[in-house]
Image (cartoon, rainbow, N blue to C red; front, side, top):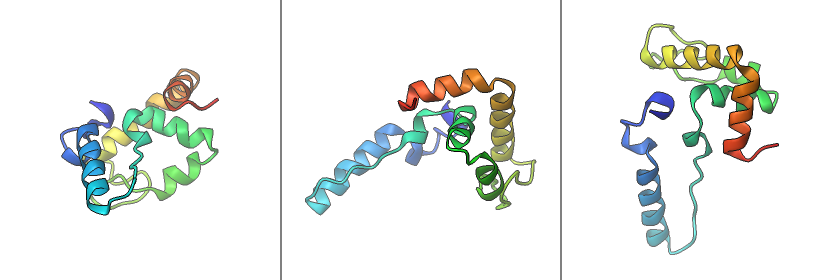
Length: 108
């Protein structure tokens, strides 16, 4: 399960492709939805933030918590646990995770 939330239909590739097709038909123009984070696990998402030298910003200013608390969140909900586990995995294996993220995303 990538990022732990594939049970949500809006986060599956087949849904995004179908939505993209529907929007293109309805708008009669070529619009493409890009979902690069869909293919990264949480540790690789942290690596991406670090690659762009934005790890402190992403850690402090983004929202994952189901209870609406920015940064490290409440620490109790499933989203906070998943986020914390991804960060810990990245910090414990930074070089390997960074290499995997670069390979998946095509970054050098």
